[in-house]
Length: 199
Image (cartoon, rainbow, N blue to C red; front, side):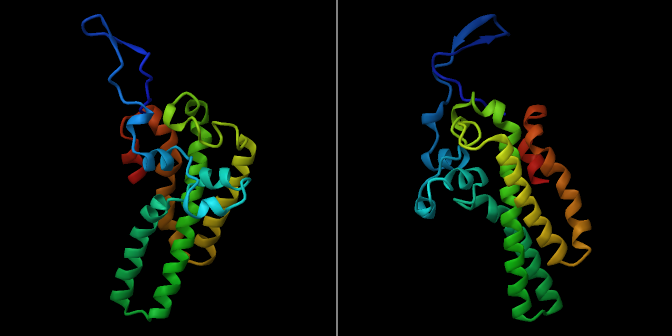
C-alpha cells in the first residue's frame, strides 16, 4: 500500500545511514483531480450533485460514479454472454435479458467490494492524504452503518446470482470470492494487491 508523504516528513536511508528530505515525493496535489475524486471517494459531480446531501456519502462509499469499477466487473461477463449467445445462437431478447441481469449483479458486487474495502482500510485511510476524505475516514458514515450497507449490497448480488442465473453459476462464482474478500488485507501483506484483485 502506497502512502502519500507530506513535504515536511523525513525518511531514513538504511543503506548509507543518511537522512533524506522527502520534498520530492508525490503528494495529493500530484494526482489528477479525476483520479483523486474517484479513489478518494470525494466525487460530487454529474448525477451525484442532484441527490439529497444525506445520500452523497453513501454514493461516495459505494463508488458507482464514475462507474469505472462497475464496468471492469461487467465487461468480462458481457463478453461471456455474447460469446455464449453466438455459440448457442440465442435469441436477441434472451441475450439482452442476460446482459441486464449481469449489469445488476456487477453493480451490487462492485458496491459491496468498495464498502468492505473502506471498512477494512478505515484505520489507515485517516492517515493517508489521498484517502483521508473517504466517508468512513472523515466520519460521514459510521462503521456500523457501513457494515449494514455492505450487507444490503452483498444480498443484492447474491439474489442476482442465485435467483436470476443458472444454478451452476454459483460454482463458477465461488472461486472469485476468496481473492475479492482477501484484497483489502493483501495491501498489507504484499506489493501486488492489484494482482490479487484481478484473479
